[in-house]
Image 1: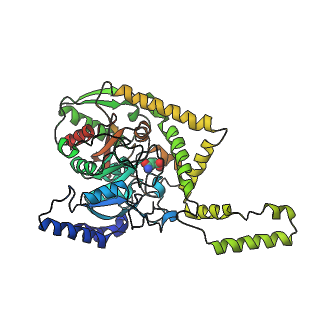
Image 2 (image 1 turned 90 degrees about the horizontal axis):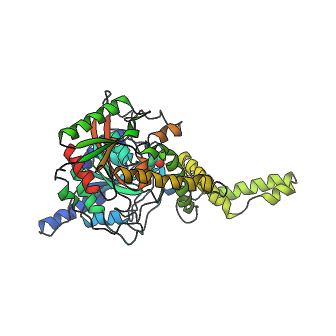
Image 3 (image 1 turned 45 degrees about the horizontal axis):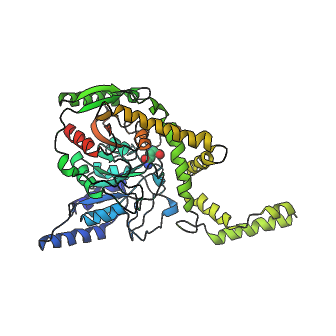
Length: 474
Ligand code: GLN
């Protein structure tokens, strides 16, 4: 009830939620309470409100991906993460805003609402999990679920001053997650502390036969290990993450945080990830390629938005009449009367500009003649990026650096410049390309009062260590 009251009081301005599930949340909470009173054994998240990024299928609840395409889509099943949260007796409090289909870094690409940063309502919350981060910063929920394809958990966490963990690829099942780029997408916990993130990760992680890429490993007791301090922690400062483009205040905060680790007994050395400079180029080939393929399913027939057929037929009749009047035999022969017309029109109306841009980029890089030059080449460099990490982790336990090159910025300042927006992903995309885990934790504020995030990345399946190191700092 306290969370719902805070949503009532603050979310008009912040705009974290696309849907607040008031009735079902109260019902869930009351039923948990009734069971508690009867002395029944309850799940680990009994009664705890969790906000869900609106791209996880939730049975019977509209799941939109913040797109007109799915504005009215009601999934007939729960994503595995949702089933696990329900099994842990969590209370699903609402669905949070995001960039359309998780494509973006400011939540400004949402077709369904505006989200602002609770620390300064002129500024963006980051993205694409902007709503999931903002609702934590504004105390509307203690926990939320985000997804991270190139930084979408870590960067909004850093912009909003909360904790966000992108687990190793495969740790959390993607079943029921509406796909953006399947080889990069990972679901992860967002919270105000590393300890809370550990508790949430424990609830959602685990092998799932419904996801063929899910890791068949035992889920560690993150909630227990998180509080154990790490002895002899070896941190590697990523040389390439302190170069051109890094904001001075972010650098100063992160360097100070590194000193805190030293004072806690960590040894700190420099490491190099030489291929990370290709991260943005590689990511913006691979992610759109996969997206163009994944989003082909939205055809106006199977799922989501379908253009108005009457209008379409009227337009077709008009075109035909015009051609007939002109006696344009050639034009009449070419006149498209096929189902493709509906497909094209539905997609033209259903997808926003950034999604269209990615579909075009992706179909281009996958097309015959360009596949080898772009897509295949990007896959090769992706391997080199992973090998850089493997080499670095021979000498250090975790690598450390900033989460994003700048703190949050004013809404509207980058919307006309996609490349400037893409460059904000410089330090995060390589973890997705390598399949490894990364966490962002707050480490200070800019002079204008915006939060700054520190990023730790670890070798595959090092989530325990990431959470411990984060907790130790906090
Ligand atoms: N900002 C990146 C992009 O626009 C990352 C998005 C994400 O992780 N979902 O692709």
